[in-house]
Length: 158
Image 1 (tube, helix red, strand yellow):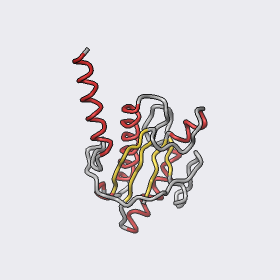
Image 2: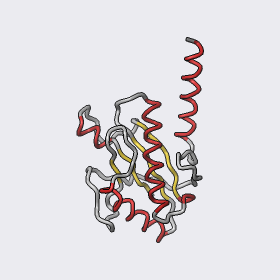
Image 3: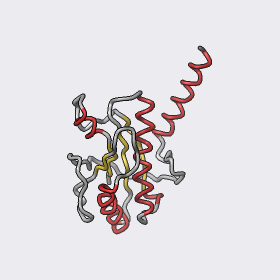
């Protein structure tokens, strides 16, 4: 029993370190500091290729792959970041289901997935920081599928 507690404690600390680290992405690239701000919008729909008003990429339950419908949103921001030579922060989020540790790791994977997509679109990974908030910053406060769908996201923040 004591051995299991030590293992769980070590796992929790590792996940926390990765989640809090600006360089802790799963795609192996390094991060750089970015500017933060509120840059999120509501709604669970994708946007057109030039639409910068959409800043959230939504995910299916327990998934972290960027769906085709959100690639135009990521492309629009990738183009803007390349044009302005700015830094960007990708904030990964999860719904309230699952443990705190699991949701932090899932939020990290979601942010890293958006980061990788932006990198493949030509943005230097040094200009993209990823951070996970897990379930700590919900957009919707409800305890139903609509609220959970709104909270399964990665936000693109300049």
